[in-house]
Image 1 (tube, one colour):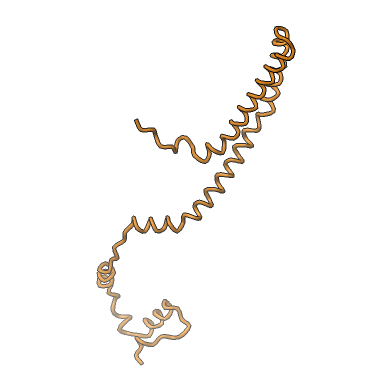
Image 2 (image 1 turned 90 degrees about the vertical axis):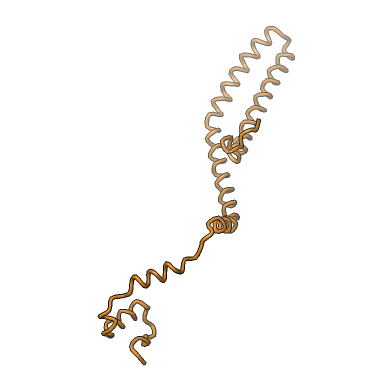
Length: 153
């Protein structure tokens, strides 16, 4: 067997090459043919279709992107709801104070039952506004206004 074909078992290719160059006089004396190697590597260029590669990658990653997007949406929704709930006690206290004052004013001008009806109707309207406002937070996080397409026209 020649020194070029001799390769020890268990050695990495780099170690085997170093051992061969240390033993072989022709390999030690001749410089490596860099220009020829570069020419061969450049001649074997594989055309890459970046669009097809991107589509295949996106197709394979789609389930993971959906999962991560859903997780992120729920984290944003919980954070936004908690942040929105911070001023709620102060707003409700202020509304109760205003409604009490409005009831005193309206009951002086109208019968007590009609004044109570008007104040409770207004309070129900405020509860509806609060509910729709807090229900809109996750909807707006899922589809922010900046991401919507502009209207044609």
